[in-house]
Length: 249
Image (cartoon, rainbow, N blue to C red; front, side):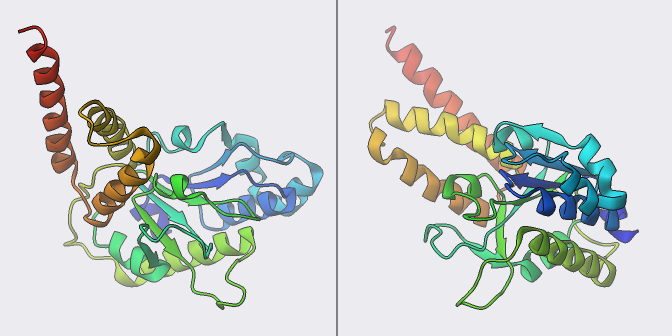
């Protein structure tokens, strides 16, 4: 299947799902589209229940082998590119949300993405702003403004269908080598950046989270490369070294 050839390690991640029927349906979809792995963060239902298994059918192997994590950061630790689905209307204005079509056309400009994760949020309230900031890109599925929220399994089915369709029609042999900073690399770097900016007084504790979120959103939009992120991290390390050693003199 072309989807598997381009994304050899596609991971579907569900955050705190509370309906076993939805989980079972998603497992079945993973089988339909030959997804590599189903990951679940802090499930709020019995994902191994009879209800889930009945809906999964041939996708039951995804339930049996799914990896369960206690937080989203751990669930994306090994992923090169992380996409997050958002159907909420109250997301932060600082978050840049693109259409699913735009995102899928963009990722097809790369030769291969070895570890791609797509995150889906809770049935009732989606992903938090902080969770959305863990993704490299945020997308939505265009729906009616009067009723923008989709059922979880329906959203997953649309995304997998669109991704597969886009893969078949837009695959290019002369595409670029994937070199974006990973979500984990950006997150870990900003932990250090925030600590430094608090230390030098640029940030205040009660506002640091919001300001760091804006900066992180900007870097995601800029499609920051691994090399660029390493340069920024090197600057932070050098400043920390200077501050530490200057106190001794």
